[in-house]
Length: 166
Length: 249
Image (cartoon, rainbow over all chains, first blue to last red; front, side, top):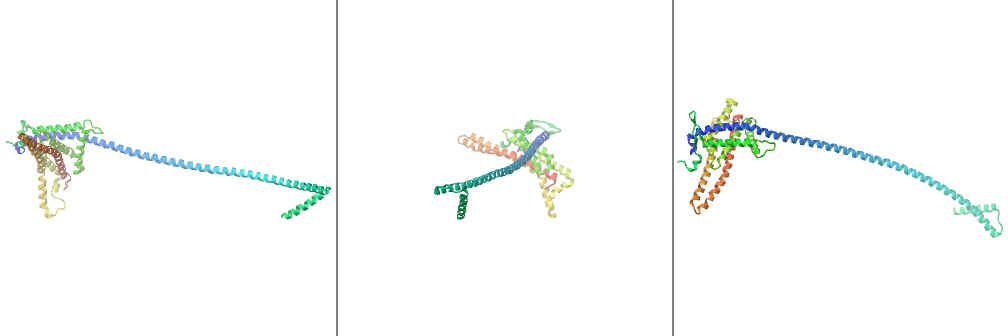
């Protein structure tokens, strides 16, 4: 095999040393740039992730704040509604009482008037009864009885009928 | 007379030259070493010429090779190995480019020569010894005495460890050389079959398709071998360096 020819060893190794030395220097010069780019990328990605993390947590804080505000507003509104309801119900009760009192006054006034009318009517009824009795007696006897006699008789009848009714 | 299958491995002195009594002729091997050098230089320079945050294809390729080598060094040597990344990188990419360029038609495979692979292996061997003594002094000899070895077995173990250590440059160089040589011979042999069957005429012409198909498959296999052998060479270099740096077994 040509590979085992000793005469080709030295030229190959000599050129290999020269070429590989240059290659090593090229690689040594090139790698820091590759490393820098890779590190830079890792840094940028890390920064972006950190920023995203911060943004996420601040968004969470904002949401929490919003929730808290919302809860406060809701409880305030509920309190307001409850207060309004209590105030309204008190007012209604007062008004109702007033109206009731008015009604009661009116009712009692009316009852008094009815009572008065009733008394008047009863008084009139007696006069009418006396008149009617006197008229009937006059028609039957042709003589008009005395007013006090009629009144006494009407009284007696009224008492007996009241007793019968009772 | 050289066999036709071995013709591709022949060294031709294109520009004969001697320096200090040594033959330093510019040969076809030297030419392909230079082509490999230019290829690597172009790959690194063009890839990183406009290095951007979001890499293009070439930049991605350069970064991937770098990341690959850094990963290999970190895994096998640890944090102390960072200083050797340029060396491992240069070794890996030189062998990789030489292997792949050697597969091009009419090309010369630099790594198919035992002198080249042996020069690499011998350099790595001496480097390991140098680093070992520089870092650990005479404690470097503990490399041949695995911890918790029974005293009775000590002479035998030390002998075995010594042989395995001394055979490293040989196995390292022969592995790469043999893989490349065998692959190229196989390709040449099957290519010879295609030509012979084509010249035989008649129905044999059709039979020539079989070695052609075989050669296509072999070529794919050789591409794989080219990458794998570069990786194995760099990986074993890492393992050997680790022994010297961390004095581990």
